[in-house]
Length: 339
Figure 1 (cartoon, rainbow, N blue to C red):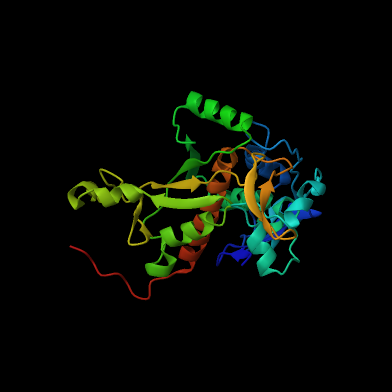
Figure 2: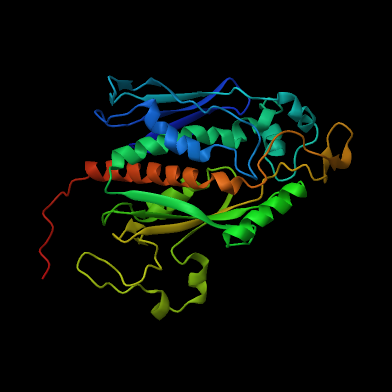
């Protein structure tokens, strides 16, 4: 539901236009230096402001209200809150009877019988990822400097060159439309052995977390779907060193659901933003017919522009949970010698 993880466990809460959004993190080890200032760098990367992002401006100021004492984590549940300050809830009143195509308006209305908070998308809003980014910063601190996670925009609206991406965003804004994109993420410094086969494979856990990001519609690891068009002789990564280093990395750093010591590489597909001012057709429940809808409010023309840091955060959260779980595991017997 709204919680995720085993040893590093998150519980997320809040709505886009509610009083606050935030996150509770259980399992943070004691003694890690942490301040609100250290959370701001990643939060600033998520902030709106660039061309193609929402004109809604929020301070996104984090408030740590539990789990930190004298500048260090205590081992108790750690809570980070963010106040919603710049809301215009009236922009969403028409969506009660006329849900946006491609958005969660309709399913939320049906699932919770109309009691859901529809303002700004409510609990389905991308604003809820503020807490995820904060948790990701904390997860990175737990993992330490040996593990490095970095993501970047690979493609926007089918374009890969920066100038073409910028031009496509400009055109979408003028057309009152939106664009999707692809984000690539890489994590280095991972040991061999994190993850479990089948249901707790690294791919399964990461995909679970990544698909929780609003607007994510696809995830592929290593060569991904291109692997279906390759031969085994092409796709297999030759092992070239005793530490498991491979000559290629089509597997994306994972074999059998377990990290193999090579860079973890994957890509995320982000769909175009559903909320667009361009006229659309959708069902009007009060009038009981299909009618034109023009979405009001302030929305991102390309939400993918703000997703890289969220992808990094989700990756750090999963890897932190795997690391803490691995630290609890002790071999029952001495491993056999290998000749």
